[in-house]
Every structure is written in structure tokens, then in C-alpha cells.
Length: 244
Image (cartoon, rainbow, N blue to C red; front, side, top):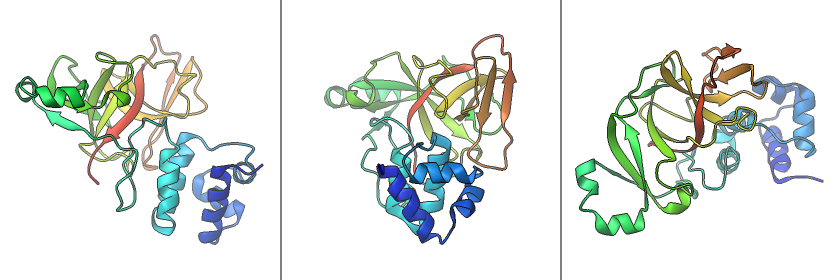
């Protein structure tokens, strides 16, 4: 039975005038994977949905938005690859600590206050952060932070290793309660590497004794952590915000 994603992948391939083998080459997968997607037997991973969105951004912008929405949960805010604003992005406000205190009306509308760290997470090389050093707060409606205060942290992105999805100075929001690497395979995560925080895809081949972190930008090599002494995953990226 055809799935919603299978029909769109097949349509994109035909728009690009590619065979299944040709599309597989562009995505770095086997032809059998593309065939399985188009027949609805397998669903693409988050990494592959992101690559499909990149291919569709010029040829089929509406399908690019569909693939981007498939990257995460319904509450995930997506930065669209097309000029039209994404429908699922939360309305957010950014405040300093002083601005937040008198904002009674906004506190009623934007019920979840998420601290954004002053030091950036490196999207390329690790960079040390101080989690007690809060730059500002982003405030979102409660439905975008169902686990409540204390569960989320905002982190700035620096660099281009997650482009075109995440760009320099984007803010990602991390759910620190979701840290099991086996459950997060295929998701975008924040990980502690060499005393710095990286935002990467957690590759499907990840095991508990072998963590594989993958960039969106193919110019960056995978980071492989064999037999880590402690779990490096500090949380699941549940949404992000930024201006293209």
C-alpha cells in the first residue's frame, strides 16, 4: 500500500528525471532503499528526509516542506526551504531576563520559558559552553514544551556543518529528558564531545558502545565515539528557530 512519503519520493524522482539508481546515488543509499521507499516498505530516516528536502527545494518546494515536516514530531518547528513560512513553526518571543519579569500578559500566552545559553554550540568543531551562563530566554506556547520548565535548553549554532537545515546563529531547543541513543537513532541530537556541545544527526548505525554523529553538510566527516565512558547524548533537538 502506497504511503504519503512513497508517492512524493516517486514524484520527486520523476520530476528530477532520475532512475531509482540515480536518486540513490545522489542520496548515498542503495537502489533497493529507494525502491523500498517508493513501495512504502521502509520509511526514510531523518537524515534521508533532510537530503530529500534539499533535492526538492528548487524542483518541488511543496514536497520539500513535506519532507522537512517528516523530520520530527508534530510539535517540531521547521525552518522552511521555500519562501513561504512553515505552518508548524511555533510563535516565539525572545526576552532578556529583565524584559521577561514585567511581561505578565505574555507570560500568560507564552507559558514555557526556555533559557538560551550565551556560548554557542559548535556545529563544526567542539566549543565549550557554560550552562549557567544564560544569554536570553525564548518563550513559546505550552504545547511546544509539554514537559514543562526545566526540561529544555536553547543553544546557538555556530558554523555550517548542519547547513542548509541549520545555519549560523540559529537556535535549537534541546529536550534533556530524551537521551537514549537507541531511541534517538535518525534524530537530530545535541552531544557532549571533548567538553563542547555538537548538534548532529545520530546515525542509524549507532549502538550503545559506538555513537556515530553525522553532519548534514557532506564536507564534514562523521564523528565516531567508540565505547564512550559516559553517554555523550545530552538531549533530543525538538525544534529550532532562525531566519534563512
